[in-house]
Length: 312
Image (cartoon, rainbow, N blue to C red):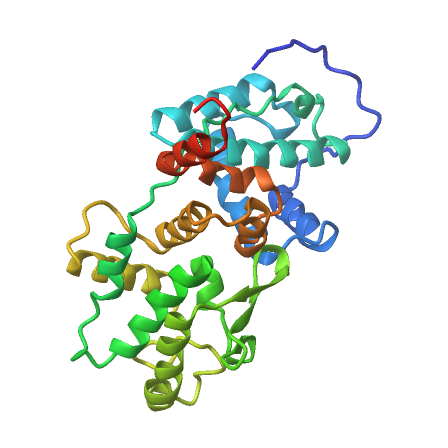
């Protein structure tokens, strides 16, 4: 990140006192004018909180922020052990915040133009073998009162590659058992249609017909997956259920709901699925995000090379 010293220009109009709600006004701007989702705005608030605390601790007026102040904050984040991806995300939030301050004639220097995002290493997602996923799907105890729900949940996660938040928010009207499809509402409220395999359909049908009616309470709503109290099964509860059954199956390593999303993509590509189809099923906006899964299955790559290269 190159540091450039700039002389302070004489401001044409500056507020005499910076209002303490400057961050709040920026978040309001993101929500009202930029139209970002509430969850995204909350993420920006979380990412900016440390930076704002750093500025206050060092007695730096927001009007006088320099590139060095940003660099010192990034060094602190690195010393705290944050991953490069997390630091890059926070830097993106800081850059947008400073750009907003500069546009509002609050920040004296055009600091955002001096900020370069750090290069991110592309790490391969952790995936599990078919046999391990099969062990997971056989892990729920048939004598458990929530066996049908847990089985349907695990089957659906692996059959569709849905994000845990998407499964948590899935409603009855989004599922069509007769034709074997569901409507998934993903990031940015984008809708996609996902086919559901027969195994997952059977498990889901049994759960909806035999168990869910008995779990319904006054405030249950239309959520497909319910907790023991009859409320929507939230993301944390789903994560715990997957970890519980992974441990019961004796699977080493950290298998999470997102791991099943990785398994879905990797196993689909290994089975010969087109990359663009997998991209659509996962709800990736950019195919480069999906391409990472082509590097996971080396056996598949070698098989295709041996079959297609003329000098084998």
